[in-house]
Length: 240
Image (cartoon, rainbow, N blue to C red; front, side):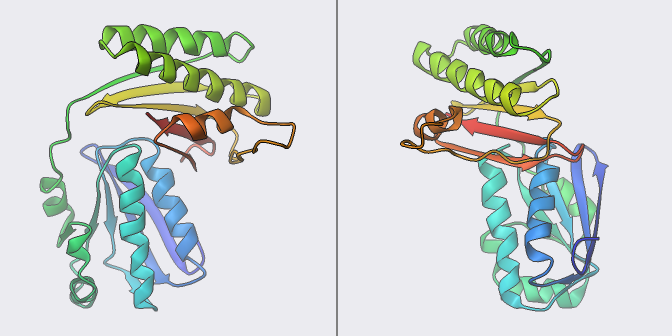
């Protein structure tokens, strides 16, 4: 239960179906947004939001869905689709012109059929040990896969630096072994590091005397962010 919403999710042919039942209002808006980002963090085929049992108290709250859709389109690069057979909710989405931003379907089956074929992507993932050698192993892992994928030397160096920084932060601030996942899609390289600590990272700027790896990532990458994961930890990601 988040605010006035009861939210749960389940897997369906590679996609995650998130059911939001109850009232979407100021007390549940941010929590639902965080939950959708958390479900997307595991990089399913798509996220489908079942709105059949949801009541919207303020029409402006519907802005949540285009915002999340735009966010997860960047990373992990998956679509968000809305589903409702509820006539009132369907009419409300049409009045909002939601289809300008996101696909709207009448059933889970129709939404599943409507998931676009994703662009070709290459993915590699590895669990790292809980120790000081993890940063070096992350660097080697990314470099090796970039060479296999024939990535440019410049992008390889940058991706390896990002991986080293993210894993280094994980080793410094958490207590569990990290997992690193890299992906190449449409020429965009993403680096994501998962750990078991739910606390979100914070950018420490110049002049504080305590700059962290995220400062470099903020300057080097197209985008970066973090999200909680369904397992109770978090993922920190960056795209180049």
